[in-house]
Amino acid sequence: MPNPDFAHPLTIRLHDTDAAGVLFYGHLFRHTQDAYEAFMAAIGMPLDGLIRDGCWLPLVHAEADYLIPMRHGDRFGVEVAVAALGESSYSISYGFRDGAGALRARARTVHVHLGPDRTGSAPLPEGLRSALVATLGTQ
Amino acid sequence: MPNPDFAHPLTIRLHDTDAAGVLFYGHLFRHTQDAYEAFMAAIGMPLDGLIRDGCWLPLVHAEADYLIPMRHGDRFGVEVAVAALGESSYSISYGFRDGAGALRARARTVHVHLGPDRTGSAPLPEGLRSALVATLGTQ
Amino acid sequence: MPNPDFAHPLTIRLHDTDAAGVLFYGHLFRHTQDAYEAFMAAIGMPLDGLIRDGCWLPLVHAEADYLIPMRHGDRFGVEVAVAALGESSYSISYGFRDGAGALRARARTVHVHLGPDRTGSAPLPEGLRSALVATLGTQ
Amino acid sequence: MPNPDFAHPLTIRLHDTDAAGVLFYGHLFRHTQDAYEAFMAAIGMPLDGLIRDGCWLPLVHAEADYLIPMRHGDRFGVEVAVAALGESSYSISYGFRDGAGALRARARTVHVHLGPDRTGSAPLPEGLRSALVATLGTQ
Image 1 (cartoon, rainbow over the protein chains, first blue to last red):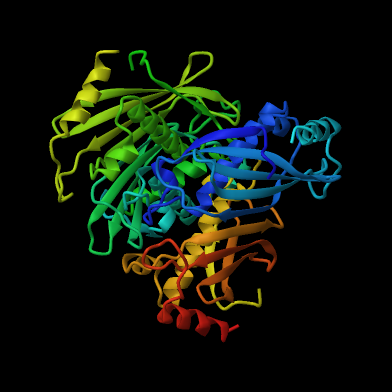
Image 2 (cartoon, rainbow over the protein chains, first blue to last red; image 1 turned 120 degrees about the horizontal axis):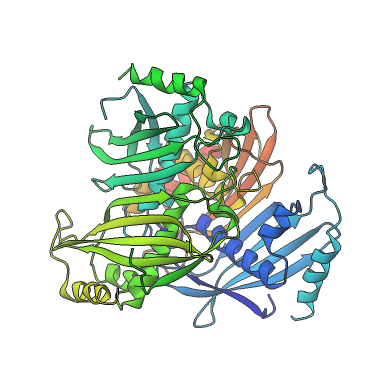
């Protein structure tokens, strides 16, 4: 993930952790979504607006690597970048970087644009594509 | 809560707990919902069906008392009962009883039936009212 | 809740909502916790530090009123205030106020200080009491 | 995933869905954990017992593919199997199969055994290894 310009702030709260004392792995995927929504809003494509306009972009894949435990009170910048851009889909990468600059976790999500009948994929709307492409130039 | 006939099984999982070693209080309200949905299905009023039929029953109040800590691996029967029944609303009570018979937490939710325009309350549909009333006789 | 000086920002994300199109009631209690932890940090009593120092303050009660539906993309200031302060417990109130100034939900949590053996309540530590008292003067 | 003998029941509840009307992707990872814990208990290695005994098995990777949308009220058997078994780590696979036999989602988690100092990996305890190996013969 090449030093992205966008980072969303995150503080690990008590409900993010479990009785083993560290972040429960599944909870990371709320924070990827928070960072993704903030990123989309920042590039002029707020997700709630897209959904209201009938633009459906469901996930078909999500994954994460947990590199260094994340604990209650830890603070992060969640770096977000467009990792791949296809005809009807795109991939977003996430890096959870702590105050000391260490990457503590990383994640990736793949989103597909559904056509109006929502049964198959369809080319990304031009405005969305342009906004995603524009972020590539900044990296 | 007078010894209800309906109890939904629950095992506390790692993601229910937090770094303090016990259930995080907010997570209890997933389990009230699980038990409520199982209860509604058991009385012939599955919630997903009601919502699909346009019957909206949003919560206007929720509360819980945490009596004895709940830990990873603990098992419960979540007792569900109709606590109150009004013209356009009803209240559900929940008791989290462990294997030794101790009540470790209790909760209550209040549900209001919205009319077709969803801006104000409306009398409960007759079928739903009958199903809820029928449970009162069993207690 | 008398116009508190502390408000924590919140944007409703997709995972906060459910298929009925509005906030799922249980998810509100992650946001009460986020706002509570931000409040405690702001008054010099960060919760992760208290827990690390062996100061246990479990909840014994939580409740919420849902006044106006909260939807994906909605933004709030979560107002936090000390609502009551006892010998060994305190109560926190939360108001979810939208950009138009409307109170869309409110909540309350009750916290008890446990003694070193964690089986019964104990007087609040003096530093914590002072920090909570100091917030009362600002309202 | 070769027709595993173990399947954990799951009903999609309202809090599993989002305003787009389908399961929110991150919530799938509570259900992988529920199924994993039920699987571990079934093979005589309950996770809460392992943690209490100081056996730490944190995740280093998680991933999921979302094949067919999962909706409120849908019922699944979550099939669980040991997908790989190493010296100090193992991988678990999950298949979310609906009543019609269709695989609607699949997932995989990788778990590493930490040594007593919790800073590096250590060989799996013999009892745990044997229990995991025994499941391979049943597939």
